[in-house]
Length: 146
Image (cartoon, rainbow, N blue to C red):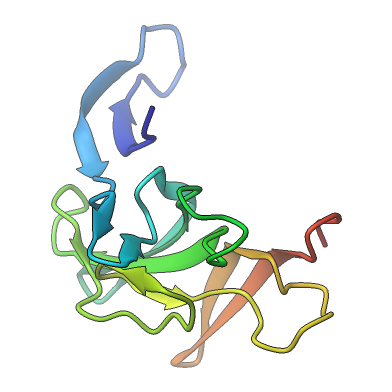
């Protein structure tokens, strides 16, 4: 079962039932040739959203377990933008180093073996520090999260 990112609307006093609206970020395709979309199973995990002069920017975790660990398709970081906070467009590119497909992938596991983040990475908090974006993220070496 694929996980999608949704927005919910609720009362500020939290006495009403949450009304779910349509998904905001959809998962990718399962496989295209020898490549697997990096976000086929999960898209939009642990998102951070910033409003930068009217453009919403979102960093999120994504996962595809189809070929893990042989293909190195663990958790990765994705990026998308929106003008209204509802319609999101994944980054038009793929910066990941493992055999992935699909737009939006901006970083993945370390390419240096034996490091603390060589199996999985998940974006955490992102801030805009004077025009420079800074991210704190979680990493996993195959056994331990840090």
